[in-house]
Length: 157
Image (cartoon, rainbow, N blue to C red; front, side, top):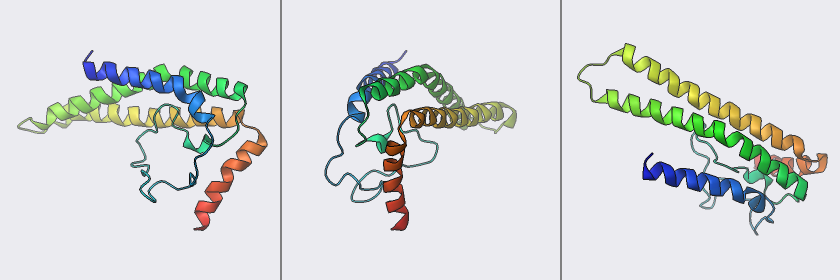
C-alpha cells in the first residue's frame, strides 16, 4: 500500500469520526450561499462524490444525539463498501491509463476496464443515494421541511 493510500485512508477515517460533531454545528452567518456563488466551491461533475459525511444540507439542523449517533453508524457502515468501490475505480483508471501509451488501440483490452470504471462510478452513486435516503429517513418531518426551504429559495432566484 502506498503512502498516499495510507494518508487517504487515515483522512477518510478521521472524517467519519468527525461527522457527528460537524453535523451538530450551527450554520455560520451567511451560510445560505449556494455552491458556486461568492467564492463557494461548486459541486463539480455529477460522478464526483461529496466525501464522507458530505451532507452539507444537514448543517444547521438541530439533530438529537440519537440522530447524530445513527448518522455516524450509517456512514461508518457504508465506509468499507465505499472503499472497495474507490479501489475498483482507481484500478480501472490505472489500467486505462496504461493502455494510452500503446502503439495501437485494442478495444478488446480497453472495454473491460472502461466497463469496470463505469460500473464502479454507478455503484458509488447508488451507495451515496442509498446512504442519503437512510439519513433522511432519520429526520423528523420538521427537519425535512427545514431542508426544503433553502432549495425552494434557490429555485426562485
